[in-house]
Length: 248
Ligand code: NAD
Image (cartoon, rainbow, N blue to C red; front, side, top):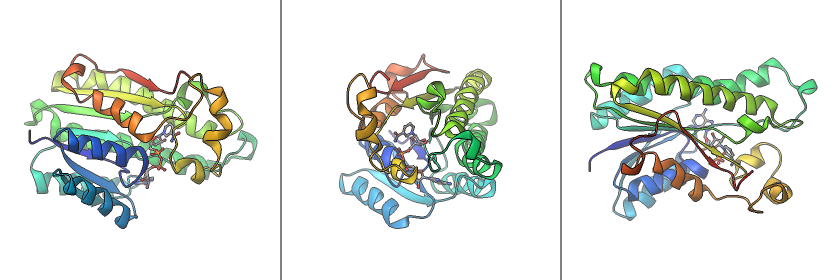
């Protein structure tokens, strides 16, 4: 197999776990990162040490021009694109709506909605059969928050993931004829650094009693769900959502 998969925000957490698994499944992996070149290089090094193919690509997915440059760089390097995982995402500090403002909401929407939207556009321009592409698969990393709403902590983040869900549904229908499937995973409480950036490093332990499986999930468990959509078993799934939330 010589398929090329681009994963945004893949220098750590769910993105890094997905990069490692995708490489083991035979994909050439484009490891996007925003600023931590060392972490991205270490993911690439681990993939290569295991005999896989990977390269790091710097781009802030909150910036449209950087996204276009990212996809151009991948195209120039490999001449094809077969898959996209819109994984990069951010949380801000826990807050109630009464203490939120438009600047905070816009920061979140830029990375969690506008970024994935533009990445989808660039992927569709390259994968669409009618435009000379070979079809492909897009997986958006949403959140259980899109259905739970995250009151008193992250309503803005939850709303951004709700928008991503709707983008997944609409785009799946728009590009089905182009040989492109578009799906999403909805992780629950996963043990990654995002909780520290949300101002709550101990969150997984604090909330695990609310999870029917009574624990936080791992990045690897989410990576497995993401990569299922790229498998031969998933060829009839588009516009679909896979919950990876321990039953929450
Ligand atoms: P994480 O914070 O470890 O990873 C997020 C990654 O996105 C980081 O590598 C970060 O550098 C990158 N990123 C952030 N802004 C970026 C930008 N502007 N451009 C490029 N990259 C950027 O957290 P994670 O848990 O691995 O999160 C991955 C995805 O999973 C996110 O979309 C997140 O919303 C989603 N998610 C996580 C959980 C959880 O509990 N961990 C639950 C539901 C959904």
